[in-house]
Amino acid sequence: MRTALWGALLASTLGFLPGAAPAAPLVPDDVVAAALAAHPEAVRALATVQIAAADRRAASVFLDNPVVAFGGSVIGGLVQGSLSQPIGLAGEGWHVRQAAAAETGAAGHDADRVRLELAAWTRVAYARAVTRTARLRVAEEAVRQASRLREALVARQAQGEAPALHVALARAAESEAVADAIVAAREQAEALTTLAAFDPRVLGAALADDPADVVPEAGPSGLRADVDAARGRVVAAEAALAAARAAVAPRVDVGVFFQVDRAHGEPGDLGLQASLALPVWARNQGGIARARAALDVARGELSVLRARVDAEQATLPQVAEAA
Image (cartoon, rainbow, N blue to C red; front, top):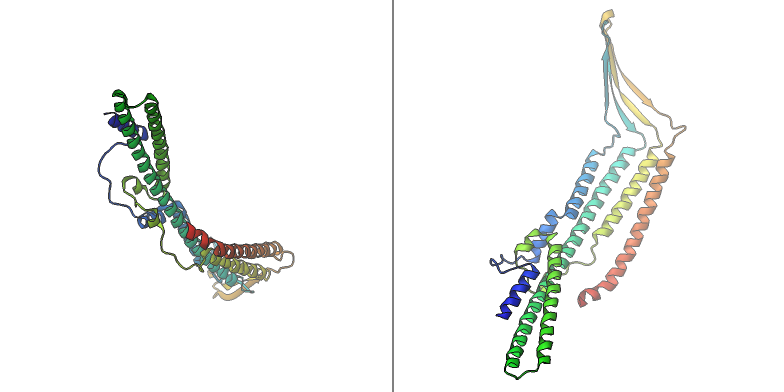
């Protein structure tokens, strides 16, 4: 009777009571797939790739859209119009396009890295939830064992076969076991809450029994998406610097124009036109300086990242094996 009361007290304290049978086990790969599909980090990484791809499609060898102008007089019969297209003489548009393509590739590698890290953190959270659940089961069994021991000693004390000190110690052990179970339940709840952020289904499903089942098969260690992304940003910065230097050359607006004067019976004109701005005062000095600084930063970040990757690949295999 007392064991049942302790069980009911523990269940109410921990916030759960026996209910329906748990759903089918939710394997780690299912949780990882759900996280990669809906987690904000994965969605943000995919959106970044889509934005970079849209910028790549918008980048053109022609720097700006063609300009069409049309007009005419209200009273007279004059009608005129023109069509012009800005063109960079030094290939600025081509370099801009190359930079956009490199940024798109870098964004794709960044997204791959985000997905890998998100999958890893999901598996860590899954393993933590499994271990916390196992610890809770052990703590609950310790409560049952402590309750049986206390009941046995109380019965023996009633028959004069056990001293009061033994009963008091059993009661203290039982109380300590209940306290440990409450802590274990709180830690399990925290672990499940963390895991639910990756896949809400974990709250209504059974998990794996062995944390080792969470560990995936090892993949190629020489491939690093973050290094590839850093290389892509260096290429993009080099193209951006080339575009900034090409922007010093004047842009030429080339096109055609027409003019018809019906009031005077003139046959009209159709001809070519061109205009350019001479780079006398402004030669994109600030743009070139910023592009050169961005390239230096990108190269520095790639150098630091390579050094860190080399150190990780030299030291982490032993850590992973031990884990």
